[in-house]
Length: 237
Image (cartoon, rainbow, N blue to C red):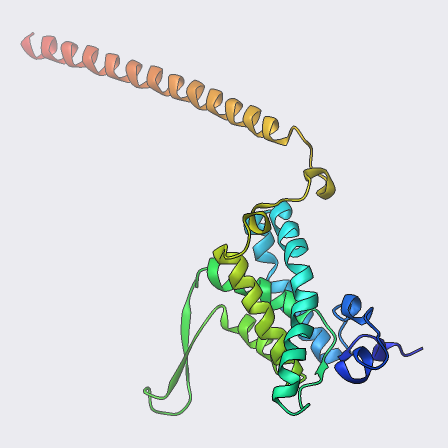
């Protein structure tokens, strides 16, 4: 049974006429076509580096704190823009595009460029396009932003704005500093103590290795001094 029609949002008739406010909660649950789905999955795959950089706890906290804004802010912007565009803007496409662009803002701000390369557009070296290892991620994100115009642009711009706002700490302190409980992601309350024990063991091993190295260097110095004295006696004799 085809249920894709349940996920996108149209202010008229879904919200104003039929009062289907439940769409505001589920409209980012899935994409409506395979092209957007593929671009979204590939973009999320490349953005996994954010979780590796932050850790699962901070990553999950970011998603939970930004999700309410990603769900509600694009429809609110659509309500404001619809009269200004003579009802041209009326639809928001389904899919988690705002969440992806909120993550993309973190990717842009925190992940450095590893290398750059140039693509020649003609035989002349002056006509070249400079790209980087991050260009492919931006290309996939652009596919999402341009896939269902004009609503997809609103979703992408709103998600980017939310990500930048969170990144710069422009909201309440609780918004950026709150973390989910560690046990929700499979952590343990004594995890900090475990890291402290590991650090102490490594320091102990380092001190033991340093002592052994110092003893070996002392032995070498003693042998060198003894050999030098013997050489002087041999030369004298």
